[in-house]
Length: 256
Length: 228
Image (cartoon, rainbow over all chains, first blue to last red; front, side):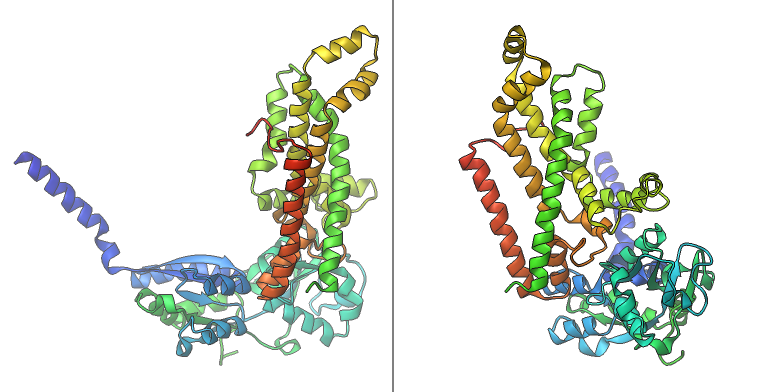
């Protein structure tokens, strides 16, 4: 009898412990590397406001596409561009009418050295640096945008020999922040603090110098059954998330 | 098929591996000899240090090399003082990183080979009044020949296959630091699977041939080092 009561109380305690898990769900999200900081903050707000939780994986959009094509368990994909999201949509691995632009990327030319990069980016046409870091234009939209800016300025031919290519935007940031590359094109979100460039020196590239970096999110087929997945996509459009997105230097679609 | 840029990465990879192997043999031979014969209490520490790259994730090793060899790091300051500039994003930088990364694959087979020779041949040489140098080149080297071959082949092959370290310190520059493993990775990332398959096929063929030579022609046990 005593025995029985003991086990019953254990069972009750255990039920209490697992109870939240039965009505709150966890969504597995593949997030483009440039969105690491804002998404970490958004995920916290998402958990507080909905009770669901979000598990985040960060990496390059191209790698996520190959992983998802080969059965990776992600339920939501937040790409660094529109193309990679469309690719999964066309492959039937994502739900087409759920795709939307959650942020417009901002490009910055940044150096860890204070005073090196002027506010017009004129350093690019001068000497005084040996390496210019950018994300591989073939793989990363921020790299492609950087290339477009250089071509726009007529400096591509001159600067190409100085290129060092990061595999994604995070690695590019490492090249520049460790001082190995004197300057490089990064996502503004990587160097922003309290609404302005936090350390070193930088030039926020005007939007008209390159095609907009539309970052699209989409619900993946694996997330259709999980209530937390559409909830997260919905949350990205909520004012609370949008404040965070803007805080990290991104623009929002339709309201530049 | 292989494009011109694919072939360039293959050529560059073999060049990095060639230089790295040469340096590793020069550094690794005295180091392995000392490790095989010393009774110093630092032996364990040195063995552990040499073996570290076997255990550390390559990207971790690569990241700290990037920091240390950078303009604000200790090695970076030294190379700048010497007028060499900084090492990341350069061919020599890649060779230096590869040497650190693949050194255990050279030191451990050599150490085992030296240890198995034992005292007797050395004592015999000493009674014949051979100098230590003479002993090393006339007695030790011929006896440890399979060990030397194994060390060189494993060091070379392991450098060809490295990825994480070169990704971190290389900067993916064509003809300078873009090696074959990085090229395959880029093909996969860009979803160019057929290009990736071709290049990966070449690498597979190379790796298999090398191991086949090790196991059959040389009749040695390439992994007969202390860790296995």
